[in-house]
Amino acid sequence: MDWDLTLDNYDHYNPWIDGDIQINRKIINCEQKNNGDCWLLSALICLYNCKKGKELFNNAIWENSDGSVSIYFKAIEHEYIIERNEIIKYKQSDVCPLGSDTIIAIELAIIKFFKDIYYQKIIINKNAPYFFLQRIDYRYNKINIAKYIYLLFFDFEKFKTYTNSSPLDGGLSEVVFFLLSGKIPETITNLYNILPYIHEYELNKETSVLTISFYSIEKTKAPFIFNKDFIFLLYHCYSIIDADNFNLTIVNPWEQNKKIYWTINLGDLAMYNVKLTYCNLSSESNEKKYIQYVN
Image (cartoon, rainbow, N blue to C red):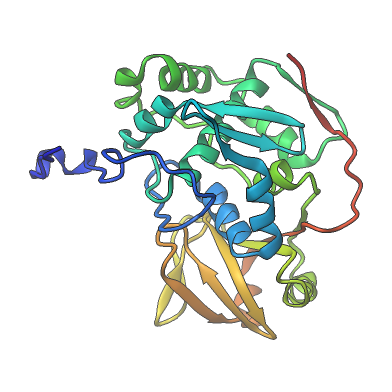
């Protein structure tokens, strides 16, 4: 297939859509586009960087004989079927992340999960983790979310030009960790509790995952700089893929293959609201069914 790479068509060019769909359970070559899905991609990068996370992928993702893909969410004991044409269509949109087809299939499964919340196919207990209650309170009573989902799955030509809020905007990495592992992640916002959790992660790299986000105390949205070599953006989620004492290796989902090596300075952190999300994938935490899928 010959691609027209003139400037007018460049935004729609995606070299991934012309080949075969390949579900290899690998989270590689990830590059976020403009879908507000940094939290989702950061969580997937963390899981793929972790031995236990790769085991979860092997047990939760498989390709069916008809070419469709099954994504199993342990937390709700439900399998989502992603059709081959859904993956191809999503790749043609301007919001689809670049990278392996496994990334795209999981993202579509989570969109379908949110769709089921909206249409009340999923019952959420009032004692459910806050990250699910937040999604209902602030997102799923909005008509534009219903329209977004409808166009994505039923009128794709209009979807490609629809710019209203995506159901993925403003999500939390806790959702991904919980759905795939069934474990309740821990959220740490107290500055003095951050280092103990980083140390905990350092001791359990093969079985635990960690993401980090930054929020300005002044509630501004300007980027801020920790040193001359890189910039961290506010209200953006990053993957932590390694830790050693005060040193972190961080990945921005914009470019998975580029790593940021950062030495933590508590004086810098004190100027901002920092949120860590930690999940021990092998913990014996209570796996009570806070949410339940109903047909």
